[in-house]
Image (cartoon, rainbow, N blue to C red; front, side, top):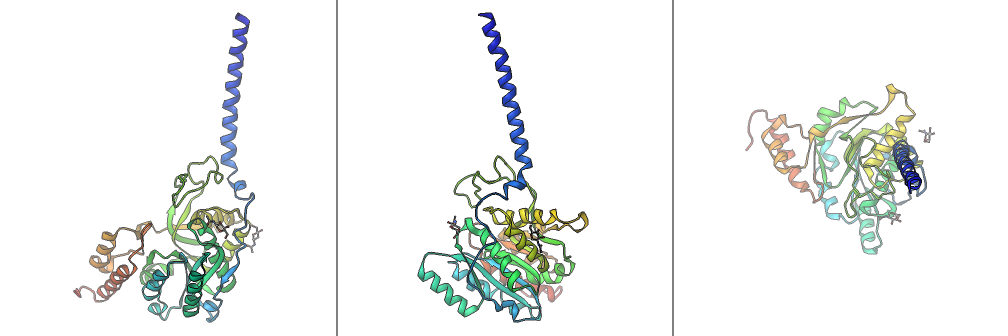
Length: 335
Ligand SMILES: *[C@@H]1O[C@H](CO)[C@@H](O)[C@H](O)[C@H]1NC(C)=O
Ligand SMILES: *[C@@H]1O[C@H](CO)[C@@H](O)[C@H](O)[C@H]1NC(C)=O
């Protein structure tokens, strides 16, 4: 009996060692294969066709100070009406040339498609891509926007990429932020390393085949709710997207993967950088009301958003306008 027991003992130790080393190698290769993971298989995000294209939005001008790309669900007709009459009305910002386009996907519903075509004829501000309009496809929407700017709006100084449940205080942006932008810098809500959501049904769900075995996003990025960047960088981003593996979370794809890819080719001094706007952003209604109505000229709130529900754009816009009137009138209280 003795030699047999000894044999099993020795082999058990060997098997243990083997399992431990395999585990180590697996983990290590997972960490170092971040780059490779993005290059294998699947469809090409840069290869998107237009179903509706309004080519003249920027071509009509010699230069555009700011183009705003608004990702919008195809069925959000009312939201777009509200946006066009509030913070996304170009006339608000004259003499600055501010232009706006809405990015949508497609839907298998003739009525909705006809309504969108009518909307496009009326406002000439719809860009529709040939992909199913769904939250999981928002990466395509972002790439569509970058493709469109690369092809039809190269004369834009500043590009703002945002969503239809966000309000940006552009008055404040033009007065206090725009002149300090440099051409290697992206402004937005900085995210160092969020946990990857693996729960099916979540808006941020990432199937296990992406970033396999990882718990946290391996690269920092900017939240997609609003990113402000120099127009000159857009062709770089679009070009980088052509050769990148699709990733289902838009902001990580656009501002994590693509930024890393672009920076890979740059020397340390010319690498792109993020400027964190977190302290100028809120989704808290009590806070934005207090800031705009009570702090007057001291309110530096740049971005208000809602993550899950529809943002009451009109209310936010009204307090921004009040804030401007009050700030302009110095210490006199208009109310
Ligand atoms: C995303 O769009 C592609 C192209 O239209 C489509 O095949 C796919 O089903 C869409 N995915 C989702 C989750 O809607
Ligand atoms: C476009 O991307 C390719 C591959 O990533 C790169 O080799 C090339 O230099 C890029 N071109 C421009 C104009 O950025």
